[in-house]
Amino acid sequence: MGRTPPGQTRRRVFRFVRERLLNGSPPTVREVREAFGFRSVQTAREHLEALVREGQLSKEPGKARGYRLPDTSRPQAPTRLVPLLGRVPAGPLDIAAEDLEGYLPVQAPHSSSELFGLRVRGRSMIGAGILPGDIVVVRRQPSADPGDIVVALVGDEATVKRLRIRRNRVELHPENPDFEPIIPNTTELTLLGKVIEVRRYLERP
Image (cartoon, rainbow, N blue to C red; front, top):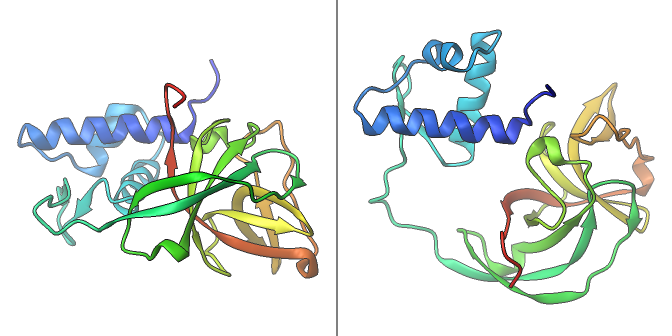
């Protein structure tokens, strides 16, 4: 059997932790490792910390059983209408296009001018749970941290990839072993923004 994509495994980890929390028995990181057969505690911790960053879990510092479901009583971010701009390849580079398809309701503290949506083409990011036809919501920003999923321009061509820094060089990595990393010339690279949300519709509108 092939390796389960990280995004799918993370969803399973969330369901497991959520069920334990709703039953009043918060799991430890070691219990998550044992439940999923991870080779190391660090792998379980990485999934849990990713869920915290995504806002699906919260964490009380210094507690072995410190993971919690977010406090839904807190005020929610306002809903913004952000533009859905054409398509971005998750595969080989392609010419960037900004064809306004419509607007997306997005719940975020950022202003509408800071956000935009793009519909994904290609399969290079399937290991991150980003499939052809998905919509990525992007926050405009000129830089990002290593490991972030970004939308970048290389010359006039756009792509969605995971950002890596190696030997002081920017690399754009796919999440599919069938695709090669892109190592652009820094003079040709423009970071459009960081992917902050992925949406999938089971039925086309």
